[in-house]
Amino acid sequence: MGQSQFVSQCTADAMVLAAQKLMNGHLVAFPTETVYGLGADATNESAVAKIYAAKGRPADHPLIVHVHSMQAMGDWAQEIPTYAIDLARDFWPGPMTLILNRSLLARDFITGGQNTVGIRVPDHVVALALLNAFHAIGGKGIAAPSANRFGHVSPTTAQAVKDELGSFLNEQDQILDGGPCTVGVESTIIDCTGDVPKILRPGAITAEMITASTGLDVVEPTDSNDAGKESIRVSGSLDAHYAPAAKVLLDQNPHAGQGFIAPATTTTPDGVIRLASPTNDVEFAQTLYASLRKADELGLSHVVIEQPTGTGIAIAIRDRLMRAANGR
Ligand code: TXA
Ligand code: MG
Image (cartoon, rainbow, N blue to C red):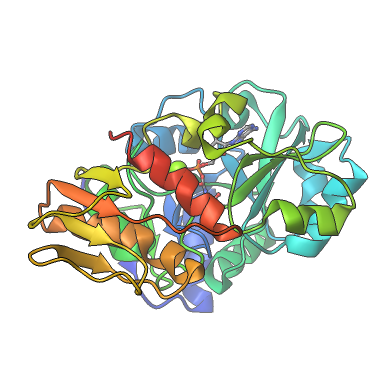
């Protein structure tokens, strides 16, 4: 395998070329507001197979289909409940994936053989430009998992995608550089196949926001440790996930030579290598994955993380940290 093209000038012309790459069955990694995705034409089985090969991901794990607007929900899903329409209207484009009953378009190679499909309209100018350019040439949707090797930390910069997957992509594939991701943790996944919305993976769209949008009580994982038991098919819910090579230790005193991620108000003990000092939870989420990557670049054996204690996005941060702490 050769080197994929790294595209740093995401002009309209470049987006048309990238859309054509997708249509021709190649892979295009692209930025979203959450993390970078590794995209393929969601209707092309052999293109989608390349995603699994590049990631080293088990073939029965379903992929999220990214679409250009909520109108495209009807292409991929059927029997869509009213509350899912409310959520789409209120939070798309945005960091939210809806699990819906699939249409015939959503084949087994997308859904992992399940009767449901995950749909998302991402909120990033480059992602939307790519999705619109793909739609303009007849594309139905872009299947994209996070652009990391299976079980690793999701990439939040184009360089991180290159570091993770560069050697698994070929020269026909592309990596689009749209700058660092603003949210920094993956989308909230909401199962919309029952009477009420059920959170499968916490993210920036919180239970409170879902209730405010739909008027419904939300089924939440009772604590983050239970999230993984909701559905083994949510690969992000496998116990060891989002993990750097360094061992992640939560809420302990860091020792000299260890990496340390903690809120800015916490001081750094002597000899400890401070990797991030976020001043709030939003910044914590934005910088978390890049900080974990930095620990590996520095060859650190351990990273100690003082978890944020609040609600909102802090719930998603703790969910990912619990899994990262389970190691690779
Ligand atoms: O923010 C995100 O969601 C990012 C960006 C690129 O959009 N994508 C992402 O994809 O995190 P991935 O594949 O790394 O994680 C998506 C999760 C997986 O754990 C998958 O199992 C789950 O969504 N998923 C997809 N379709 C599903 C379905 N029909 N039912 C249950 N879970 C599903
Ligand atoms: Mg992932």
